[in-house]
Image (tube, rainbow, N blue to C red):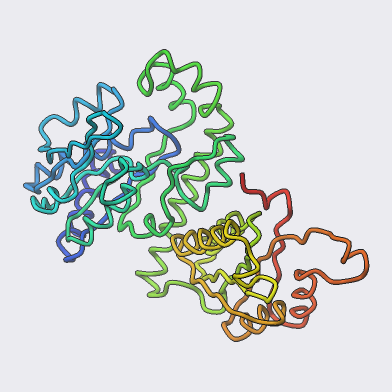
Length: 386
């Protein structure tokens, strides 16, 4: 006999409960969805009530109801950790109080909207950093996030929605999740919820339908959410069943320079590929004489540092080496470190190419043509960060 929805939810609660009792480090459960309004916070609150019925000490760290009546009603009966009052630009604002949560040390704390940016002056810049701190303190966390906030999908989401999402969560934070639950609705169901006024104030509905909530946008975002949930399950199977994090001999290396164009996009592309292939990956920067620190302006150096930071957040190893011959150094590193794919940006044509000089990409291609290494060249059109 097939299980009811209630029975499946009960099993999910019991699974998370089992995880809680296993480890000193806090366990992390994350509800994701394709967009606002699919019911992530609602599902999280439902689970909190089920845990309370099992005598688990659950408290609300922060919940964003966005004026949704059903969500607000579901917070009733769940104890709250007092919020911290912060004055910013002459206004009194409230923020989640990480220190008070750590002092109270509940078994489980609910932290809504993982991608939120904290008020300037807070201990941590981002809420996901608060969550990591709570987990490290041994507190179990249940949280929520929309798929458009995932760092490696930033370019894809911008292409789909024409919106550059500013609040982003590193992929490594999602990969920390002991359980990841995709709260799925059909696009028709979500649009009906929007039109019924269950997501936004009625005055905002028409604007939402004309912009982010276009049917074609939601279809693609739903696919991204489903794919991410499936990928997370695959990674978990690799790690827990087969006891491996990556397939050996499948390392990916992405090569960047101080040129600000395309670096972020290349890194995000490599991150998605590494995730789908269960591969380890490296971001490589070879500093030639022409790119020594005294010859490169400060703005380009900042771009490089920011790209290193992004790569680290997305789970890459970062390598910086100095060399006379950049192409040879890239290929030698690839051979020594079992790299299977090298990813580079498509070269821009200059007068030197017309005179017969090879681009860096062409030099690398020539050097790997007899090796078991494939070169992936990202085109100019794709290689465009806004």
